[in-house]
Image (tube, rainbow, N blue to C red; front, side):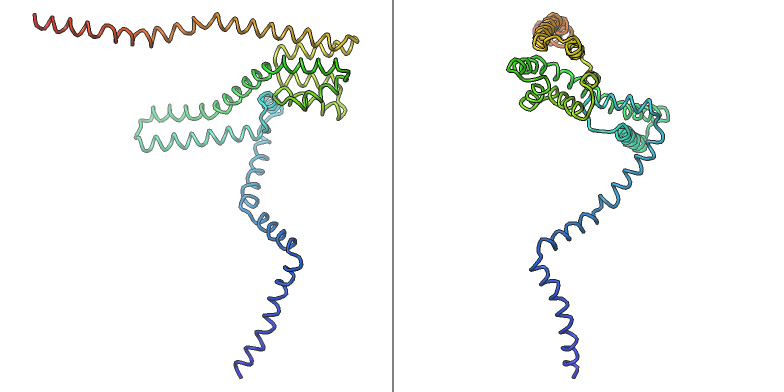
Length: 294
């Protein structure tokens, strides 16, 4: 009798289990998508890290004034870093906090005096504030050097495209699509801004602010003036290309002239003492041995 009762209860339960299995046979993609969405909704990153990061960003945004945010944003654009000013400041604070914790642990385990611990703590704070800025400055210099290196070839291709009969915007789009690089990415931004309704002068001026190179500023000024006065763009670009190549040649000659002076200090402080030790040490040792025998 008991077995019959268990069998009667098991049959509906088995049927209930079979229904989802049969639905999965007919709609496998929908079932898998639901599982993926459930996993994504329940991930630790979405539930904990993202809300915490957004909350910290809101609190940090209230503490920064607009002028400081504008300066940081301009510097980040010059460095080509895809960060907001708030995110940069938060990274700066996180690095500073990590170094402060490291300094505190060092003070505890190394048994430093109060003065040495205070100096280490102040050094950790200064280093945490300075490191992101130094990294950003290095990115700015590297990006400007790369753009300056690409400029003559970029202008040559642009001149050839204009001579082939294309308009300035079409020629610029063609060169940007065929030649990757820092300069191409910036001119791509110029094209997109013009398409969104910004004037060419405003877009090129913004380009000169993102890449504050004297050669690029001169190029932007020449293009704006040529468009305003109706001068042929091909002639302007050809002149600008020759000037940029001449400036690059002069810069290379200047570095070559400064090279011997820069080499002098390592030779005096590192190479010459080593040579003196190698050459004079046998004679000195022999002289000392002779003096001892006497």
